[in-house]
Length: 549
Image 1 (cartoon, rainbow, N blue to C red):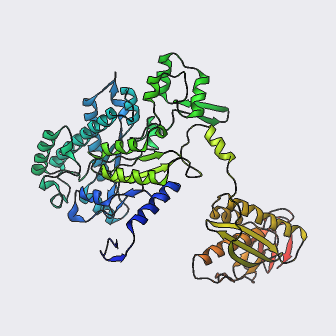
Image 2: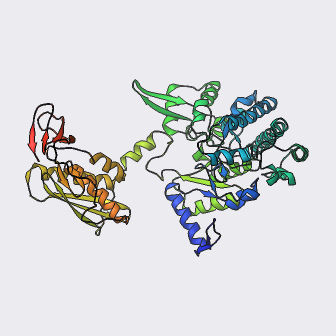
């Protein structure tokens, strides 16, 4: 049954298997939607008496009650490795300082509406997370897709969670617990993650006793955000992701610059095989597995996202999730050759291992993506972009648009994927204007068949002016291109069922006929400056051109 989460009423019945397959297919097709396992989320809801959690922030790492807000921070783990060892004391110090800092952020914040202010301060949720995890593994000489890496993930995250919660208890002693503490799981001796599966069981038991006695300042203390932008500023790998690419070519005004992961460059120099040519080859490939002269030890350590199987991506996320109170934003990368069944298997594995959500992305499943591996792939992708072929049967409508050049008939057709082609024909055949409108229609059709967003096309067409504007039921038609843009908009609104008529959408624009009107209505054919509507005529204030309307 499909149940309304607000009323608990059964809206309708659907086949779960068919829905699951449809979700997997769409994710395979373009990476959307992601999945959230709300049963798992609510099993670890720290304040169940306040209500069930039914949503997350867009990236998925913060499940929230209504009106709660994100308050996130990330520690750069790569800064805590020295001589191949983790500096645990320094990491503990930073975790405790960061916990206090995030609690202070709540105090200092001026929330935009009272509901957010009340909900945020009621639970005082914070989300301390990490970035630079892949860099940490590289410095430790550990391969990302390995059992050793999973052990490091659990060890690091368990300690971050323990220290942050211990410091939150200290804050409770100083400032008081979060107001909804008595309605939480903490007085019952529970924690919002699988603490019994860790190494610090005795420490957790002692901490639970402290929480019962003194309360805790924050309902949650940990969350792992994607850190896609701040990790660039910090100069480290993002979140808990593996490296996406080891090197890339950056085009600037003076030419192409090769940017290389500094840890990889350091390793190559130590191996004595550094050269500009090698760095460029690595940048073009985006990975090093196929470059013979690079030692196997370096290849083993510097693994990239697409070289790591989806299973290892998911296992890594699950290892962190064991000790994260909120959730995790991570991408499960898949090769372009992955099948829909691979997506379904990934979903099932993530659920079985206790992940709270999952996002998969099949390489190349979108025409544009944030990051690419190498340069040759991008060149190839540009070469193979072709307009989709015209089917034998399309459907659509023809819209009559009056213009200063006569009636313009705009035919808009679509196929199963959406708008497909536009034909524009002036009522009187021949002439320059007629050929130009035909050309505009052909170019629009080519753009639509090549995947250009129709709203971007309409934006370019709307507002183009000519010396012969025309009033109609649709308001002022500035030119033939403007008419085509308005016709496309009209068709979309009609098709989508917005209350309108195919023979014209009524727009409340009154035509000014009195001398006081000074509306800009076109461009002067002599000098190109805007024409003004004055006393029933189009007048150019720059050169004096006048034409009566």
